[in-house]
Image (cartoon, rainbow, N blue to C red; front, top):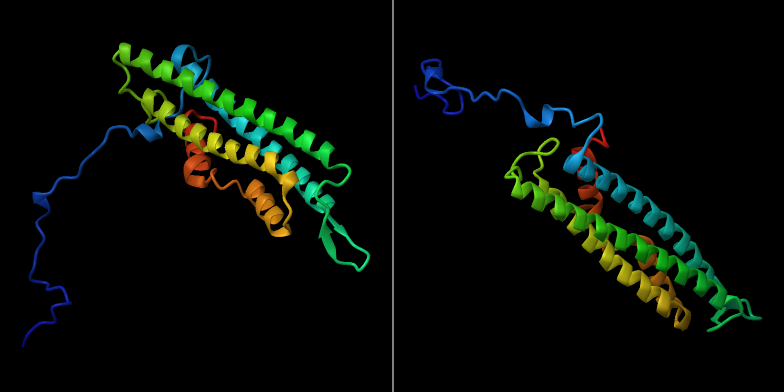
Length: 216
């Protein structure tokens, strides 16, 4: 009788002596981030991570304020005619005031991106110092070496810089739009932030905060 190949045979004995488990004394992830009165490069990296988080929070606040301004501008331009239908009033009263506020908001967002780039530059400096000390391959907190922080912040800065370009473009052109569909597209582009995705900015930021001990 032929045994069913899918059924394990009791005659087969597995020799465990041929294999030995790999043991790790301490997992680097199991270590707690450095705490207490940090100094030097470690302190600078942790402070930059906190600064970056605060800048992103300020950016998000600007996005909400800007979305409200763009909405107001769109509703102002789409006025109702006597027959109840909406038509476009290209430059209605009050539009200039909204555009001025949007311009100030974009200036604030420009400052935010500039400060993000400053964080990147400081982290590059830290990485160079760690290289000179020959400690650039040693994790500063949990698992990341010094140059990893600059690499990830550079990725975040590029995403926000690209998004800033889009916001400035919307600010400069929204008042001159004639079609309702274009206004809706611009408004959606402002709110959705197509260049700031989870992979390009949100997850990397969370990873930095986790690595430096700001997130538990």
